[in-house]
Length: 261
Image (cartoon, rainbow, N blue to C red; front, side, top):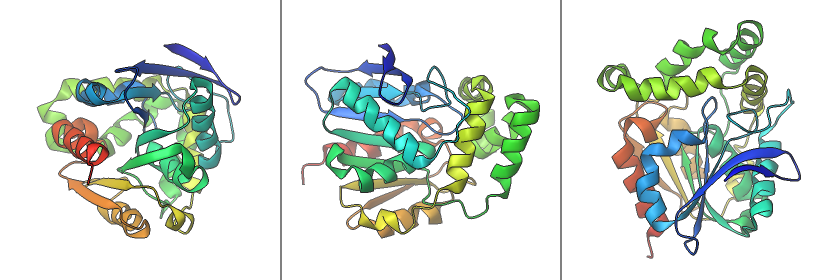
């Protein structure tokens, strides 16, 4: 679809799948863009009208210097829905996308049918790594943090097993605008939704990676425990579980989103 102008900025958006199918909005992780979801697209587009977008500061979307907050990124998502005439969507967000999803569940529950929050957290227990990353990126650019970030995204075994997939994602990281990445890093660092997320009432699935050093399983479990009736799935993966365990990830998402019980 290309660029969509909204009340809060201009965003790159791609829409695929049957026009009459339920809408499913996908929200990328910090340092990637909408093509991070390629492993899921063949199956998701059979059942859903899939709306992918680049979060502010990433890919082909507006990348101003900020400051950003998870709330402002949530308002961006609502503005995209409004621009596309979507009154309600299912939500699938990973990492930062899951943080935005938590905000939407509490602040715009009438716009969310069901939500999948993957490899994410309601807060960052230790902000020091994010402080270092922001300073490094501002001084030296994205290449300076690439390997450190990738080592948190994928297990060593996966990096050896599928270097092409790792390089595809790493290229997204390197191409992320430095000022947008730094502003998004600060938004993630400063977020604390541990109390507010308890007000969420929409059906929710939390997916965690058993070997995720960025958002360890106990943080995902904490979200699931905070939302009444939320379901929890743990995969043998690091942070980008949708890339490292694509079949299992997609199956868990589809089972949850299409369950009629």
